[in-house]
Structures are given as C-alpha cells and as structure tokens.
Length: 211
Image 1 (tube, one colour):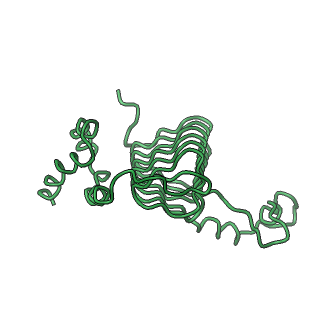
Image 2 (cartoon, helix red, strand yellow):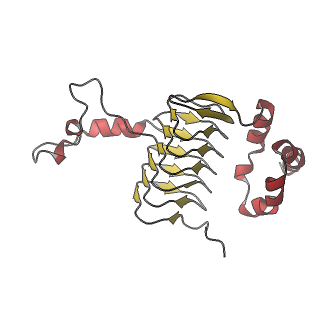
Image 3 (tube, one colour):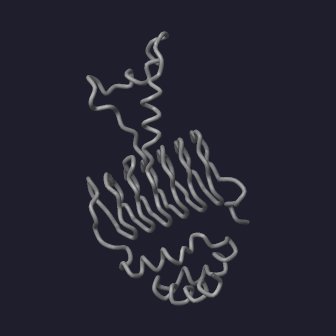
C-alpha cells in the first residue's frame, strides 16, 4: 500500500504549519516549520526544515535542517532585536509592527520544479531557484540560480551544470512535472534507466503528438 496519497499531505509529528498550502503527494517531515508558503505536487521536506514566505514548485527535494526564505532583522535601525517589531511580547501597551511583518511576508522565495536543496542549506528571501537547480549541503544562496545549475559554498556560486543547456531547455519544454499520476507510473521504468537525453528522445514525440 502506497504511503503517500493525493488527497492530503503526509505531515509528520511536531510540525508548525501556518497559512500554507500543499499539493498532492506532499510530505512534511518531523519538526518542520512552514509559514505563509506553498509546496507543489510531490514536493517534500525532510526533518526540521524551516520554510517561510516561499512558493515551491513540484517535485522539490528539501533536505533536513534546510531553511528557505530565512527571515531578516532590520539593519538600518538602532537595534535589530525582536522588541522593535514583536513589541507586544515585551509590553502590555505596545503593538506589533504590522508594517514590518507585511514587508517580510512580501519577500517571496521562489523554488522551481525538480529542485534539490541539500542538508543545512539556506535560501534567502526573494531568491529564485530555476527548475532543476541543485543547492549543495550547507550552502547559503543569496542570488538567483539558473535552471539545472548546481551551486555550492557561502555565498553559493555555480559549481557545474546538472544538465547541458540544450538538454535543460528540452526538459523544461517537456514539463514532465505536469504529467498525471498515472502517466508518471507508466513511464517510471524509463525515468529510472534512461539518460535525460534518451528520455527526451522517447517522450518529446509523444508530447508533440498529444498537443
């Protein structure tokens, strides 16, 4: 019996979920915190990830202890401490700085389809990971990452291409991540054994024929 279902996400214990949406076959690992975010179909995050203000595509692979949309503190003011904007935690007669929280929520991180974010990596607010991008464990991503590019380091820099550009462009055009659950099952063996180029050679004609 398959563990994951399309009807509702598989959410492990000890998670904090706030104002977030999940697609079909999504799995949220133990101790995750997900706020003001969306995860597309088949995406998952392993244990103790922290995701805020993020739009995550389909088939995203998010490893343990990673952080997406890491929230910032104000740096232009005399202090950068919580008391500036979580003021009601400290004084009965002080209000939260709702303008600050609205600005924080507006800084969306965008994660493409079929991406892989390694353990302990951090994706800063307003960064876009292109489809197929890979972030090495422990990397800190402060700038946009091109599709099918592998980045590593602090700050993260391109390491190499996951696929050559002409293959990456064909994969994006094929958009297999939009296939039905049944079609994915029928093509599972080819996903497992064919190279990306051989997979494209087989399925591009089928895609054109059904268009």
